[in-house]
Length: 380
Image (cartoon, rainbow, N blue to C red; front, side, top):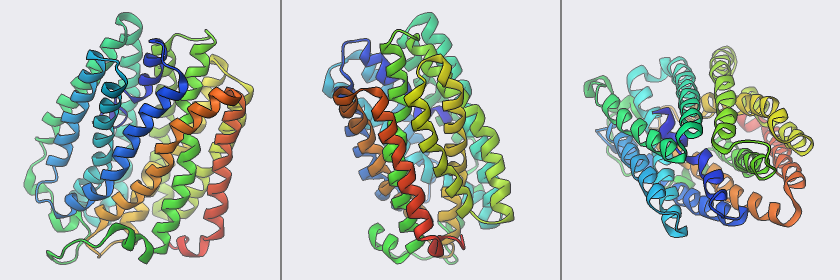
């Protein structure tokens, strides 16, 4: 199901650019989709906590991915494209808490770090293979093949998740509950305010993704706009490199967290964004792909293991782990949602280079926040 999370996302920008869309409009369509995903992430986390059928929350995203791919192929009208981004965002919003819940339900808290680390390694391997296939098929047959492949992945993921025995998932363990209670879930924002560590985590991630989410799409647009690269193959290469690095990084993060805790792992992940901003300013096109994506792979790979792990550890015993996961992703999503529009419009005003520096600067803000409130988060 790895390709369900990113789906057609990395290819949408260059696909629309080649059909005459400006960077600001591309960013706006992506932002509307991201905002929709952000708004439903917390409620979905609560539903997953209370659901007795965790597998359903992977099946629904699979349907959304198939729908998103079909819509964007049929029409490149602004609202059709925006609707497809909303469908894709709904899928992405459900995937993380659903997989976290299933993993907790199977491995329990004791085995969660190890299984989550392996899950993320396989997740990145799947994204790497998916991107490589997308790049090859896109180069040979055009964007139709890219979107068709995403739909096929969604259909296969639905079949695969049905192969997990329902009895193998302990519903109480899946939401971090020590007893089988049926209380109504608390308000997610109240929950964040009660757990200072999670609030700091959510805000730091929001700042990070405000800069990070737009860099890769803009980097691809800059190279394609300057005629330095073929659209599908360039985007696929950037994804393949990053995901390959994330496989190794996920396993390293799992080992590091088992020996210490998640705080230093997340701190290190923030440090790579400012470096990428400076690098993107000086180097565009193929020359910058490898170092840019290696740095992205390290930073994101660390977070894919450390963030769910920190949430699960800090909320253990509350019975609201997936709600907390959704709340953190929602606040993080504010930054990620605004990033494409912010990056797209600023690029139209001042150009690609200065925009990369500005986006990279948000990583410094995340580091400052993480260090300033280290007392609240270091124990996790």
